[in-house]
Image (cartoon, rainbow, N blue to C red):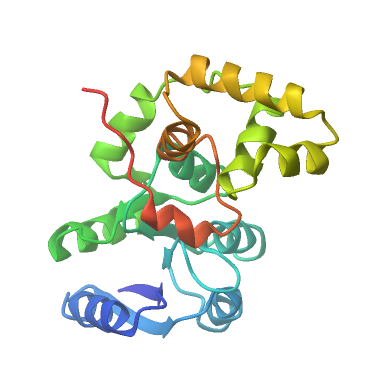
Amino acid sequence: MISVLIAEDMHLIRGAMMALLSAEQDITVVDGVGHGDKVVDACLRHRPDVALVDIGLPGTDGITSAAELHRRLPSCRTVILTGLATPTALRRALAAGACGFFVKDTPAGQLAECVRRVAGGEQVVDSDLAVAALNARENPLTSRELEVLRVAAEGAPVGEIADRLFLSGGTVRNYLSRILSKIGARTRVEAIRIAKEDGWLWPDDVAEIGMVRYRSRT
């Protein structure tokens, strides 16, 4: 019997997942939690074979929880779940020790099969996202350009960006001009959108990753 813990802050989704997986003859759901700060303690208490963890949990986010679980309870294999995601989210999840990465609208049968495969020692990744990660273009921006764009993404005008990054207004404008040219954007707003969709601007609140969809370039 494969034991599973589900960490999802939306009660309806968590309840549905628990019911669907509990209906499988070889899977038992040992617990369900709705806050990121409870994930590790719950897993240490129940010691499940697999933890299904939402990427955007309140409190400790899913990727941080996966890293902590990998360190403290390596026998528990983590699958990160998300609504929408970018290749950057996938790479960070795998770097944190997650063994799987799936979107939440995966059919119940596929999710159960994912649990079985992960429990059996495999690494399982949503196929569409895996292809997207392989095809994602490299970030053309320097670290300083990303800093400027990150502050701009908060809605800061040129003067505020300059003050916060200890730059002159003219230097900030030059950075923004180069950013637009490198990304191929016409406006600052478009540049910010592209950078978020391509995963170059990782949100401070990981829950925001659920509002970002990878832009297909096919």
